[in-house]
Length: 292
Image (cartoon, rainbow, N blue to C red; front, side, top):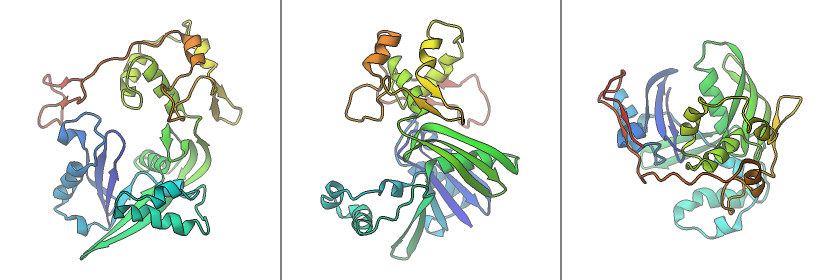
């Protein structure tokens, strides 16, 4: 069985090819187009994987995408479905109209499936729930036969955090947390507050965090912004955060500024950040240069 996995529409888009359970090739698009943290469709990475295995796209059994759009088909959206931009929008509008008669999208829907046939080519596309992809990536590549699994990021569909149990080739969900309670959003808010680009520059804040000390004047203030619950979950105090409100500026609120002070002036970076690595880059080298 040949499976092509793609991650697109998120930063550091990528592709990977698995044949009969063995990883044949995997590549981030930024390594080929030289655009750091790129969010473009991973065409180059996909072609690299196919070329590595000497395969064409129509020889792939399944394409797997790391986001499940069917989760958002919870109610009918006449603005989207009645006002198409081009006829390719039928892939959304037709299911939306049909499901409007009898909504059957479950809250815990793990994937959606689409079969596309053009000429002699047939593509079987699975859209996998984002946090399930995270869980699978951690568990199936580990040496463990059974494990507790925790995933946490900004947002995948509606989920921000999941608690699961992995056993053999099964992953069973125990609990999920939903927006706006997100550790990723918490991280992005501070990224923006420090003058960096949120949902993009978090990796820089991760590096800076190594210089922090626990017993500082801000620790107790920040700790109050997150409430940890007895069963292991958490909630963000929404008087400080507003990332989930897309039509408002800034991820942080006035209360956030009152608590921590004036935000840092925004860092000016070039529009296109370039990653320069030696070719090939299979070992460390003094020639390694990172520009951003």
